[in-house]
Length: 355
Image (cartoon, rainbow, N blue to C red; front, side, top):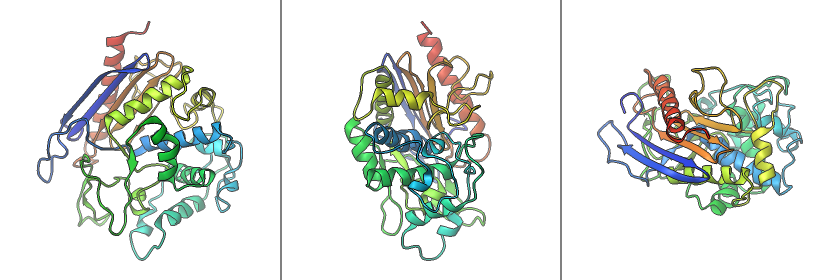
């Protein structure tokens, strides 16, 4: 596990069912070794929150006629800088820029409603004209989380629980932050942040709370990050997506909607579909490796070391959960986790073949 954190979990599916699962490592290395993990360990999914919570909720709402993807974002967020549509938010083509350290405003002073303020701050960041190109953007998905809330008429954590987690029998959940909040017991640690560093939030060991700073200081429940899950949760979600795409609806998901999200583009030249990426055709680039199919394949990665890749046509998936940012996001950990993702995906294809 050198270079990629202290813990990892893998799930492999084929034909719409899980055929392999493995977990290893410890909950943390520093400041002292943590307990060995098992299948009940909670991982901070980071940006896997996007497809598993925000996009999945949008799929359900769109399928039930409660969310029109071609409506402007301003229909739901009147003060938004983007003039793009919900569809363009989903496809990272709304003109929103990638990231702003909004937490630097939120971590000081009194903020009666951090969640609302975070969304307002994100929405007001100047945006480029939509639809021409894609920029992978947390700011856009912060706003998409608010759109989901308003379309569902529920707070995001309840929308996820009622639209996605409950119907699919997932234990995945958000962990609210703020005064009096309790960390999630049994969670794998992420970064050990130097509390005396001038350029970093003074958090110490991040364990049981979301690693993403904007999400942490914005209340813990966001459209771009904040979800925690076990390897079993992510495996069941992967199974639900591939089974529904193949015409076997799961939960409140509908095949025609899942297929649309997996194939539609919000910009003319992009690897992105609606909330999902696709493997790069350039050798040596994709975190899905070089052997994973390029047709009918979608996936996503997360900053903490998480990833999911789906081969929809074969009902196949590979999920990797890790805490590569532990004890630090620095060094070679970003390159190491990419290499590990590629190796795992290539090994799965080598083992199962491409009939």
